[in-house]
Every structure is written in C-alpha cells, then in structure tokens.
Amino acid sequence: MRLIPRESKFFRMFADVSQNLTQGARLLHDILKNPANMEPRLDQLQEIEHRGDEMTHGIITALNQTFITPFDREDIHRLTSSLDDVLDFVNAAGVRLRLYKIKTPPSIAAELAAMIVEQSEELAQGVSLLEKNKLVLEHCVEVHRLENEADRLSRNAIADLFDNEKDPIHLIKIKELYEVLETATDKAEDAANVLETVALKSN
Amino acid sequence: MRLIPRESKFFRMFADVSQNLTQGARLLHDILKNPANMEPRLDQLQEIEHRGDEMTHGIITALNQTFITPFDREDIHRLTSSLDDVLDFVNAAGVRLRLYKIKTPPSIAAELAAMIVEQSEELAQGVSLLEKNKLVLEHCVEVHRLENEADRLSRNAIADLFDNEKDPIHLIKIKELYEVLETATDKAEDAANVLETVALKSN
Amino acid sequence: MRLIPRESKFFRMFADVSQNLTQGARLLHDILKNPANMEPRLDQLQEIEHRGDEMTHGIITALNQTFITPFDREDIHRLTSSLDDVLDFVNAAGVRLRLYKIKTPPSIAAELAAMIVEQSEELAQGVSLLEKNKLVLEHCVEVHRLENEADRLSRNAIADLFDNEKDPIHLIKIKELYEVLETATDKAEDAANVLETVALKSN
Image (cartoon, rainbow over all chains, first blue to last red; front, side, top):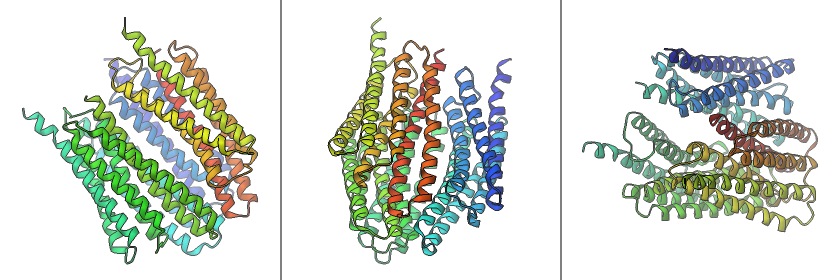
C-alpha cells in the first residue's frame, strides 16, 4: 500500500517539470514580443533553465532509487530528457539574443515562440492526464500539429531571409535564431512521442 | 502457432520502410542529377517522407501492442527511428533546394545522393535477410564503407567551397546542402549498426 | 566463479577507451597550442579516432555475446557511445583546422581543448573507480563544472567574434571550430551522466 503513493511522485515531478517549461516558454515569448530592456528577463530565463536541470536530475536520481515505477524506466528517462531538451532550446534562443546582440528580433520569432508556449501547455495537460491515462493522445496530436505549423513558418521565414537579407553576418544570426526555435518545437514533438508510447502501452 | 505469423509482420513492415526509403533516395538523386523543373518532384519527395512517418508510427504502435517481438523491443525502436532519420535528411536536402532556390546544384551533391541510394539498397537487403539471419553483416559493412567514402567526398567538397566561393551567402547554402547529405549517410550507418547488433544477438 | 573475471573485461575495455580519448584530447590541445607543422599530428589524431571506433565496436560485440554484464546493458551501450562521441568531436575539431586551412587558431580554442583534456582525465578516473564504485561521483561533478566553464568561455568567444570579425567566411570557420569544441564538452557531460547513473544504481 505504501508503494502507490511513492510511485505517484513521478507524476508530480513531471507536472513540475512541464510547468517550469511552460513558464520558460512564456517568458521567451514575452521577451521576443517586447524586446525592450530584455537583459533581466534573459537572466530569469537562464534561472528557469537551471531549475529545469535540477528537476531533471531529481527525476533521474529518484528513478535510480525506486524499484517499482509507474511506467517503463526507459520511457521515464526519455520523457525527462526530451522535456529538458525543449527548455534547453527555449533558453538557447534567449542566449542567441544576448550573444548576437539582436535588439529587435523579427516578428516571426515571437510567432514561433507562441507555438512553443502552446506545445508546452499541451504537454503539461498530457502529462497531468497520464496518471489516469485519459485523453492523453489528443494533446499529443496537437503537439504534432503545432510542430508541423512551426516547421512551415520557419522554412518560409528562412527563405525570405535569404531573399532579402544582404548582410551575411546578420543573416547567420537570424537564421540560427529561427533554427533554435524550430528545434525546440521538434523536441516538444519527441516528448509527445514518448507520452503517446506510454499511454498506448498502459491501455 | 499463431504467434510466429504475427511476429513476422515486423519484418514486413521493415521491408516496406526500407523500400520507401530507397524510393526517396532515388528520387533525390534524380532531382540533383537533372534539376530542371524540380518542383513537382520535390512535392513527391515530401509525400514519400510523409508516408515514411506514417509507416514509422505504425511500427511503434504495433510494437506497443505486441507481447512477443522477433527481436529486442529497444532494437526495433532504434532501427525504426534510424531508418526514418535517413529519409528525413533525404527530404531535408530536397527542402534546401527549394528554400535556398538552388537551381543548379553542384555535381558532388548528386554523387553524395548516389551513395545514399546505395546505402538504402544495402539496408533493404540487410533487412530482408534479417528474418533468416543470413549474410546481414556483409550489407552492414558495405553501408559503413559508403559512409566513409561520403565523408571524404563531402569534406573535400567543403574545402573546395571555402577555397573558391567568394559569396558568403551562396557558400552558406551549398555548405548546408553537403552537410545534410552527409548526415543522411551517417543516419544510414546508425541503422546498419542496429542491424548488426540484432544479427549478432540472434546468432 | 569464472563469471566475475569475464565481466571485469568491460571495466578494462572502458579503461582503454578513456585512455585513448585522453590521448586524443591531449594531442588536439597540443596542436591548437603549437599549430606549426600540424599535418602529421592531424593524421595521428585521425588514427586515434579510428582506434576509438574499433574499441567501441569491440565493446558492443562483447556486449552482444555476454549474458551477465557488470551493469545494465543499456548503460554500457550509452557509456560506450558517449565516450566515442567525445573523441569524434575532438577529431572533428582537428578536421576543421585542415578543411578550413586555419593556420593560427585563436587562443580560446586551445583553452577549450584544455578543458576537454581535463574532462577526459576525470572520466578516465571515474571509469577506473567504477568497479569498486567508490568516489565516482566526485569526478562526474568535475566534468559538469568543466562543461559549464567551457560553455561560458565559448559563448563569450562567439560574441567577440561577431563583434570584431568583419569577414563572414572567416567568421563561419572560427564559429564552427568553437562549436565543435563546445560540443565535445557536452558529450563528455553525457558520459558523466551515464557514469553517475551507473554508480547510483549499484549503491
């Protein structure tokens, strides 16, 4: 009887991780939309990413100390890593702004960040439903749809960039910003894939 | 007695995936060799990639619903992902042609695509021999050899590019095309590594 | 009683792999610090990388032929791959020097390589302590600290590059050199993560 409550700590830990991710994604979106005075908010984003690392580490440690897990150890490992990867790339986009001194990011960057926010919210909902294993798949489908949309958007933005930007150094900066944002949406899709696998297995 | 036939569906599914991959690689090679009027063929390549995604999804779903699998679940997962990755990068090369408006791709690009075609054919043969577990390794060795050759070829091509291309924006485009093609051959090598592991385990 | 000695061959194999890695990292550091007449040493680095590939292959083959392993098969697989990845990126940095004809690499590149040397030494010590499972974690902590430091260093170097380098083609070359070096330190961190997992599990 003591085992069930102990197991459910993993669900709580995943809920914390995905809430932290959502917070980071919202902050990035806010920075890209209103880039004035971005420095303190970039520091805050770095702290959120750091907190995410610690949470991830906590899950892996708990995993190694737990005999009975609520679902496959390997899947817990994968889900943890992929959620952490999303936040890493969210922060990496912030890092690019600082590194490359991008003071006025293009509006498409904010649009891509908005999609990462939506994906994070869907993942958080999927994760919260995992314990009861109800309706998880709907949220995964939505994460996939958003990744496809982000893919199309970033491709068009990069094609535009090559058509219009004549300064190669500025082109390198903005291209990389788009790519980092797009990779964040890919990592969210990876997380959705694991979620899907877990939900299907326990049916 | 009903279990064996059910298991063998995985071999059939892998055969389908690797035939679809070979078709995609051949189409890419054809486009790079005869780039005139490439648009409809790039659409077709995108469709092949999409079909590959669906096949991959089908294998993962089947995996989650099957108790007895013909080889390690983890290896089925890895083989599926790596074959899908090859096709993703084959399509990504096509996407670059469109995105960067590369009308006359360099001849080395077609040579690299020819190596991906060969690798795909070797993988398809290796996969088809997996059920009987005969001569799988020979095909894996060939995939490795082709990866090494592609690596050398793309390195030389990139060195030449840096020596001769004075337009940095054009350099960025062609460098990325080479890198995407080379990554496809790396992913084929990953698939060969899994194939090898599976073949050795069942000896 | 015969089983234990057979198992311990994995520890010996990991010791060999991490010594080979350390040798490669030291050679890269030496090349970056004293770049005159680098060609023969770049060839030697390529050979070390090739030897690493063979050692990796040997571990995977042994793994597939061994029923009882000293720790989780999946972890042996991960540790092997991540150590091999570090050496791949160490060699990739050397390849960039040749490919891009970088005759006088920036001093920060040598500093980054020095961190990879330190990480490799820490990994080698962690690996050597794994069999007795004592003090492994201290070495992992050190690998993480070095990765953080390398991350900060390479970010500042890239920011400087974008501030001061006006030639976009030269910027592309040096940026990639920094990124490849930084990725090597990331892969070392991945290896430390696996080491940590293995040490915690066997407590």
